[in-house]
Length: 278
Ligand SMILES: N[C@@H](CCC(=O)N[C@@H](CS)C(=O)NCC(=O)O)C(=O)O
Image (tube, rainbow, N blue to C red; front, side, top):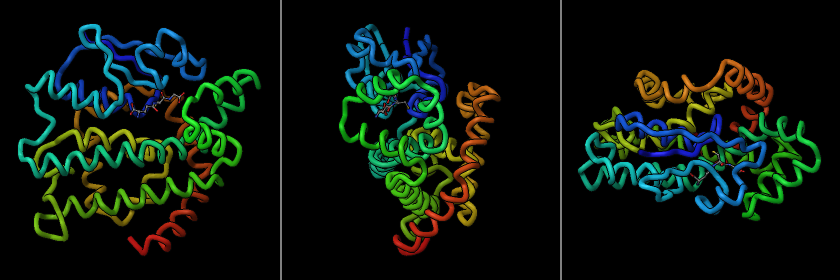
């Protein structure tokens, strides 16, 4: 039996939920409360030394890092393939996973944190808050948390996040073009004709921008990205994100995202100028 350690509204775990659904695999879910610091319990740190979710347990062995968990599921349960057989498309697929791991995870965290989780942190007692910051073992990650907590949407990390999403959507619009047209892979999915881990990995990050009422800022003039996003939402596997959020969680994301929307739009204009257009 597979066991998955998760947390409510965790984008990294949502990737794994989608992969498990697409592969039709059963699993037991164990939900940690990140705001109660349960991810830093000594027992959990033995499974996941970074103190983050998700962690997959398979035959008693822990597998960490959401992108690697998805690759592991592909290797361990190859029946419903989520990785293209074609080596070129496989490499293209992995570029999307790399983009998520190298840029979009942090970008989404900065935007979500500045919009929403910041408010939750404010409601913590000073001791709880201090413990939360102290427990973030990685100094770079701690600096990001502190910056978005203290400066909110004005944190320089939020500007970087906006620019990262701009570059990502620009690449996505190009990848979805017909083969031979400016580097297009032909669509309809990110790595060509087959729905793959590229789509699985990107979905929760794009979904988070949508829940925050921010996605259209990037997609308004990107018809191929928008069509891809509509296709993603039409897949039954999208229900593992949307169906697991309460109306209260959705309302909270929309409310807090809408509150920073005009500042994000301004930062996007600046980012586009700096990056040289869309
Ligand atoms: N690179 C890791 C990142 C995992 C991660 O940052 N998870 C977040 C939730 S989406 C978390 O557990 N945060 C807890 C914390 O920062 O205290 C992965 O993809 O699995």
